[in-house]
Image: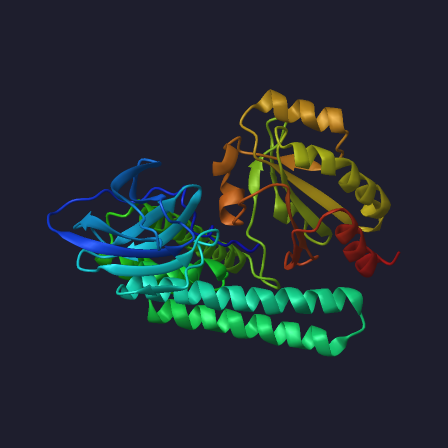
Length: 377
C-alpha cells in the first residue's frame, strides 16, 4: 500500500509571528500597476495581513515585514498568491508577471525561497516532458523507446527529489520535493526531515502536520514489526515436525479427554468457539472432510475457546459436529490455545499418528488436499 503525504497547500496552517525589527519584500510584478499586494501570515486556518503596498506604475512596491520565525508566508495580489519561505534575517526580491504570480520570474535574497522556487521550476520542466511523452505513448502504444524514455525520466526526477530532500532536510524548501516521494519506501528519509526540521521550525503548524504524518507511519511500522516478531515467536512454539503438546481438557458431558487418546490416527486439532462467526462458517467444510476420511483413520479434536458451557454445547449440536470436543472454558486464556500460540481462530493443527505436527492453519480445500495426500483421494 503506497502512502504519500499531501503537497504543500496554502490552506495549511502556518505559524504566527513574533519578535521585533523589520525586513523588506521588494516586488516587481509586471502588469499589476495600481493593485494592492499583501504579505500574509497564517494562523488557525486563516490568513492575516502583515503589511500591504499599492504597486506603482511599473508594478513595483516594497512590503515592510516584521521579524518572523522561519516558515512559509504568502504574497497575495487579488486572487493570485505566491508562497515564500523566510527566516527572521531574510529580505527578498520577487520578479513576477501578473497572471502567473505562483511561478515567479526570479526570487532573490532568501536562500529558502530561492531553493523552494528553484525546485518548483525543475518540477514544471519535468512535468512538461512527462506529459509530452505520455501523449506520444497514447498515440503510439507500441513505441517502446518512448516508454523507456518516460521510465528513465521518472526515475531521474525521483532520484532528484531524494537528493534535494537530503540537501535541504532542515529547510522549508524541502517540502517542494519530499512530498513527491514514497513515504513507505523512504521512511528513513522522512524521519530525517522530521528530526532536522524540529530544530529549525518547531513552531510551524505545517511542520506539525508533516511530523504527525511521519509519526503515524513510524508507529504503524513499529506495530507491524512487533506483529512479525510475535508471529515468528508463535511459529517457533509449534515447529513443523515437532511433537504437538498434550491437550487434556473437559468434554461437554463433564468427562476428560486428551489428544494422546487419539494416538495412532491422523488428527486435526481445531481451535474454534461458538461466538466465532468465521469458525461457524467453516464448520460445514470441516464436517464434509471429516465424513470423507473418518473411516480411513482421520479424527478431529475440537478445542473451544468458549467461556459459556451452554453456548458451546448448543453450537456443537446446531452445527452437527460428531467429533471429540474439549474446553476449559477459559476464553482466550484457554490453556491449550496459549501453549499452541493461538492468536486468532479458526486455527488448525494437523498431527500424524505419532503426534508430530504436519501442517498448521489448514482451511477447507487446503485441508482436503493434505488429507488426499495422506489417505489417497
